[in-house]
Length: 225
Image (cartoon, rainbow, N blue to C red; front, side):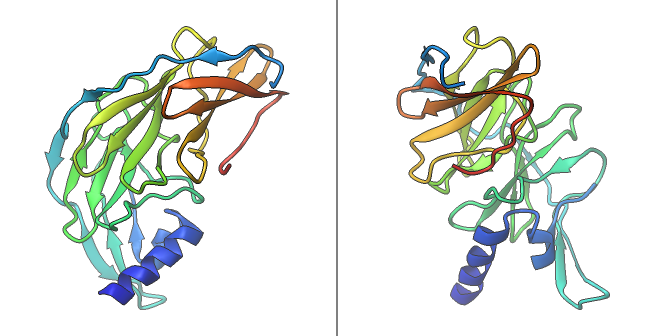
């Protein structure tokens, strides 16, 4: 079991969730701007798991390769995994996180890899299904909802507000893959202003403060810092 887990972790660090299908697991179905500060909220905004769901996991053998494949989700709705360069599995390799609109709007979910048991972890307005990623601590999932960045403890379900951009930027944060410093102290966020001007800001996780990094005419795509 130890060797199996080490091999899986090494693969995931290189490939992320997209590469997980090949490994046998799949989901179906500008710098010159003034400094700005966010409001810090230290207490959880929500405690506990929103809803527990039965397992949808099925196991079958791929006809071409002969490999065992785990299909983790089924039914109606879309189930979105993390971007291919973003970690999707907790450090203890017990859970994987994903976004799903199975209830009509996208929210954060987890799946226990061995049992297939599902759980809804978030219930926030304007959840951005493409912004999800595991933090370097291997315990929390970060995501964007409207103009706010949240972190949810995947095992416990406790959710906290990390940075609040509400009223500080002209609209909601843009949809782009989660990006965080290796030490977990800083994360990047992006928003747009007219005419098609992209703004990249760096947020400090411990204090909630954030400042402008880059202003760019056109679209930006960033996955790692």
